[in-house]
Image 1: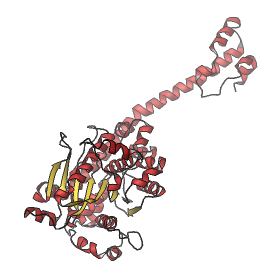
Image 2: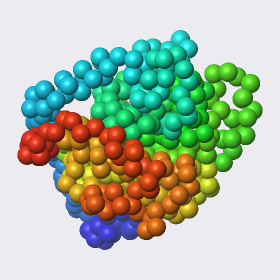
Image 3: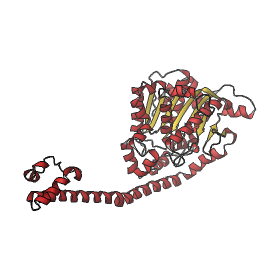
Image 4: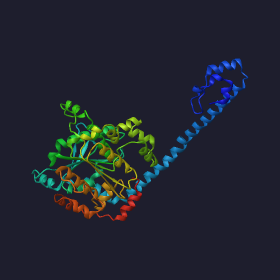
Length: 452
């Protein structure tokens, strides 16, 4: 309460305290009338002086905020972003020989990898790479059908919604292919070619293509799992939660007559696997990315310019708001490295909690010390198959109905891991590659260099 004003001008008792809008504090007509009748009133001058000081301070605060935002933040973010890309460049140079080997495998592996288009009149991005298991590749070379259909794993690569490519998962697919799993790596449009909703539409069409064509490549359309990595886990998880929403099934049946409309359901999948995924676009995550050099302005362009839009693109929030979604979701396996620098492990932990609340069968595994790139780069370079083993066992459980006695995996204990695998999985484990064998110290240096 402005005490001097209250003594001289009783009608101004409604004067609001410091911090409110100027138009709400002053009754302009009253002040003008008073100036005309008693321009020398000391109370009025004191009141006007008080307000002038208050708004002078407010103007200074505004200017200071502007300076901090536009004159200091931009250089600071520039330094952060430059550091980010400098570390990325050093990381790529350090692991360049190994990365060239992976690229050579993807580009020149011959008839074991097929590239197909999944969308009519699509761009070069609307393609999938099909990694044939050895048995399927040999049968195909001999012009015969495989003896028995194999499980199918659809992989959605990441890339920060901007820089991804289907070849990013090639080393992971190499191991899974040797284990007898038909892998289909999906490419799709990224920002700025399209928005997150456009990415979901692309992956939606790719999954439908896999259901329609998996059998042509020796896969079993009744044993299809979906895997997402990093931002690819976000796209895949959001696609599942949206398609599992009550009412989506009736809309799907109504549009079944349109050939280009996907008709698959999340319950048609045997499982979903998320590797280092993003599942909630909350303010803490955006602040974390901002500290890494990815400016909030760019985040809003990619993730959504309003909080409401970002929430509508968050699988965890969709589950939280509608528990019925969980009734239509397949079993879930979530894996996350505790050393992940770009996607905090609490993303997977929060998604796991929401899945449990919705009564979805879910398993969450944390790999101690591993970073964001371990499942697709570091672990394959060391022939460390902790992630691959977890995937194989989960697919076996989902497709055979057999459960572990203790209901969990122990990826840090290889002896225990081998002992809990069923006999039917031992052959798959024995077929996993034993080369390359990059020394652990080299990978530790790479983990230090990488900004991810």
